[in-house]
Length: 456
Image 1 (tube, rainbow, N blue to C red):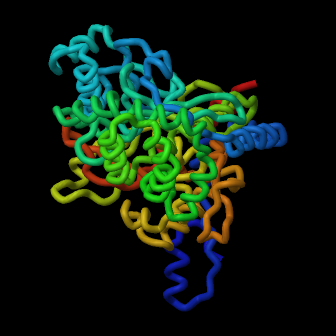
Image 2 (tube, helix red, strand yellow; image 1 turned 90 degrees about the vertical axis):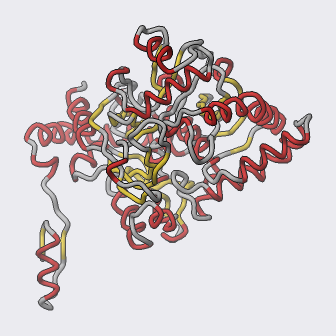
Image 3 (cartoon, rainbow, N blue to C red; image 1 turned 180 degrees about the horizontal axis):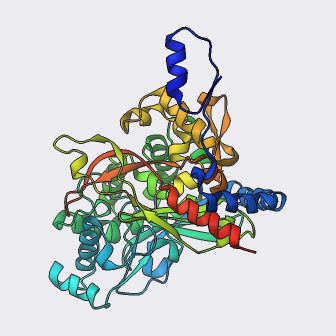
């Protein structure tokens, strides 16, 4: 038997010696403080397992329904001169360049300032308020920006009565979520606010709502993992939505423009999946003793998590830079550290943890092929509470996707969640330069374990 490093097993195999390899690692990175914290949690194991079963049931059995699309000032009661951003809280001086560029562009889009210099002065003077989307029952991809006039999808969890919100996916190219900030970005935002958003809202209200959990389960079976690949989910949503759009429209060309926009945007469903994830995860928060993760989010500087038993408290660590495939003309040197609230998808059991359902994504993000996709899902299963009862993976004989990330298991075995992600250019105005995968930093999970062990 070989214990620990795979190198020993490989050497024996090359010599023709039969070997059984056990991938063993020291618990909690051999830190005495973390080992002691895990021991204290182990003493409460029965109570914690019952709490985790409750949190898990809330996480996986919600009923997210897409019910509306309205301006953020109306849907969220979002005040003027407030900009919501992705990730945990962060002050303006610590923000990465793409996040700053997007905020300045959003300020110009809203008409609060005529140029970037004036916009920056408003922010520095505190006349524009910056807050995380998660503090407002919302999520946002990449930079994650939401301002008062931007239309947001509304997802209602009908099992628990809570709602979550997200902007409309802008499509590809130079877009606000990747830090682009030129006139084309503002023109697209204006069209979404003035034509696409109201039309989508009217159609959704007329539809009575579109149930998302069965749609997402079907898309998973069609090869989407719903973070990097949303082709099937976007098509399924368009099929359900477009008849209501056609009936709601009062201008024929508005329907054509919206249909063309959705058809040309394979990631259209991503934002909807994120709002569904937020609507599903929020009821799992606040369960005493539960060690399951309810939020994972990044802002280009910090990676933050929240844990059920610890409610709205953030645990943060420096965010990693994705690795993957780059568009022509770009390389790893051009990449910004990871951004976005989209890891809420991984929080509910999709994305990186469901890679086995979408081997095409594994190739696209540079993670290999089918074997690597299966290995990624198998690895994430080690840190999760159980298999998802509704999101099932055909390539695993319909087993459920691993769900319910447990901070104890993350720290104990030293494996952090794998997240599928887009890659933003480090320089302001560049936009998306590739796609890849990124690991959550271990340090924020370690902080959470220490805090849970100290909690009474």
